[in-house]
Image 1 (spheres, rainbow, N blue to C red):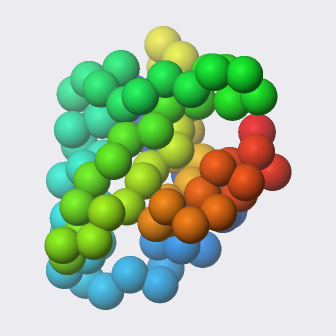
Image 2 (image 1 turned 135 degrees about the vertical axis):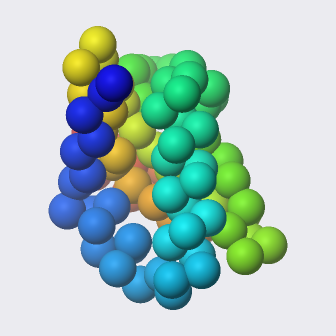
Length: 91
């Protein structure tokens, strides 16, 4: 089982969600944990970063993450606007 770590940026966005949204987010994170390669691998500046798209209360959210054999690092959670610019600041 992978250990889950979240960045300060991820935690900041997660804090803004309501309880029902948090439940949907947890379900999406469980899917990522079952198959870390289920997200879309990025190229170029974001090599090594995966992005998983999910619906949270009928809105499309993206979860940026990285993983190795022991750890899943949740980098960022946001809707599409300026998403990749924010991820580049973290990586």
